[in-house]
Image (cartoon, rainbow, N blue to C red):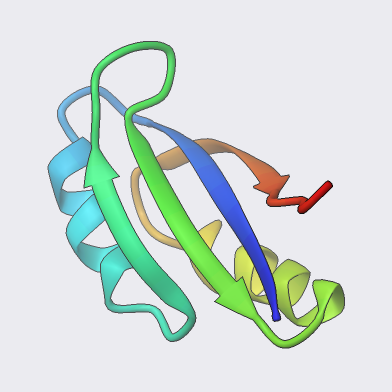
Length: 77
């Protein structure tokens, strides 16, 4: 199982709506709107890195109001 945080920047005033929509995507464990340089932080999981990448590109990035994403895979050192 691969897990990652996805940091999302949105259009002004869209953070809450984006968080609600993204939270419904399969593989998303949690989506919260936050303050700071990013507007929404998502915790997601998938079986493989490729599957995680497909989820981000094909589903998350297509949500209306998102302007930029940064995916941070979780590592266990």
